[in-house]
Length: 295
Image 1: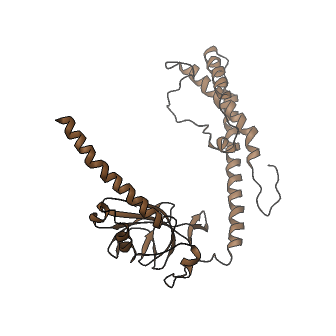
Image 2 (image 1 turned 180 degrees about the vertical axis):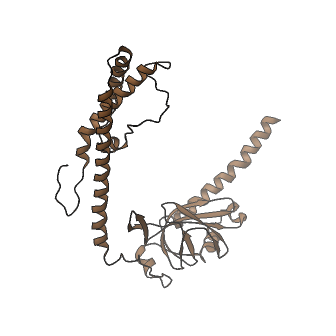
Image 3 (image 1 turned 120 degrees about the vertical axis):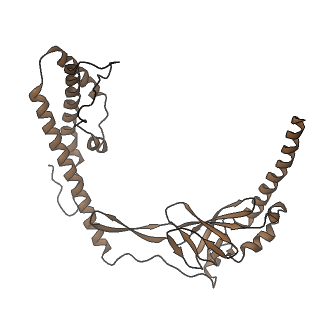
């Protein structure tokens, strides 16, 4: 009996999934890749993902950060048929200009806005594979066209265009580039100074006792296996580990004596510090508008 019940359940479920698949194919043939002009207000976060816009009748609810008036021009990127809903994923054709701060500068970037229209439809339409009736449900929300040129000729198209950049924005970009370069160079200088200080301190306290030298040599070998070939890696090095940290030799399975641990840490930090002193000068960048001088 259990086996029969399972077979019946599979038989009932399979046609439903097939219906949904066929309906989705029919809807895709009509909507996927089409150009549309919206006839309702929509919202988007304009962050690269599709922002949910729930639609019931002509009422649209969303928490997107940017509101768009009726008449937006968009392209249908995907169609999903659910049990009592059809989702149309749209990319608006015209970007928006979004501001952001970097240090003392206000900068701008063009971002594409995406919308997911989640349209409630009667479940009976899905069961009946009634793509034509679903089309009629979607018609009050979207005016559909085969080409971009046709959509742009629609009287409903609001002709929105991206906001202009500020008049002096080229100068702002130049000043920002110079500031970024100066910030990079200041960071490089500070890391070189830090490496010089650390290596001087270690050199001054190198001990000749056997436990210390044993740990020191192992630390040197451990440091040689660290890849510091890129500026990003050199600048990310922390030469000052937290105090009271339990230090273990790299090849030890248990805690080692304090003298071995100190030697290991000094050997490792000395090699890394010297590598920073050698490699970091290559990380200086030219400051726009100023001659590039090796520091």
